[in-house]
Every structure is written in structure tokens, then in C-alpha cells.
Length: 88
Image (tube, rainbow, N blue to C red; front, side):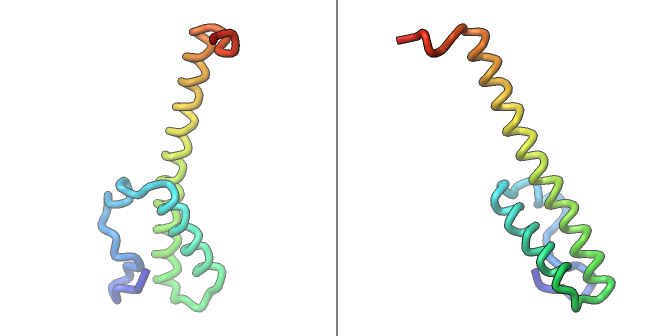
């Protein structure tokens, strides 16, 4: 995440976040938080980092929501099929 000299911190084009996996987005979010907590950045860079962090947090939340929906669907299917423990 190098400063591009134009206020953009990551160089990530809009919409590219949708292609990130959960772990990649989480790791990048942790790096953004670390940089913000460390300080020493300009106001413009700090704002760009914060905005990037917000986008990454949304990516992570979408992945977690999707995982929750899959788990709920699997549990509902299991209940609809009866007790899975009773099957051979």
C-alpha cells in the first residue's frame, strides 16, 4: 500500500475489492489498522487509509454473511431431512 502521490494509498481500482477473498481482505484490513494506529501519516493519507479500511471491512462482512447463510441453509436442510445421526 504505497502512497501514489495523488491521495490514493492502495492503488486499488474501484470494484476490485469484490475479487478479494476473506483472508486477503482481512489481512489487508489489519495492515490498514496498524498503519492508522502507528500514525505519522498525513491527514490525506489517513483519510484514504480509513476509506480503504471501510471498503475492506465491507468485503469481510459480505464473506461472513455468506458463510452464515450457507451454514443456516445446511442446518435447515439437515433438519428437513430428519435426524442425520439416525442414518447408517
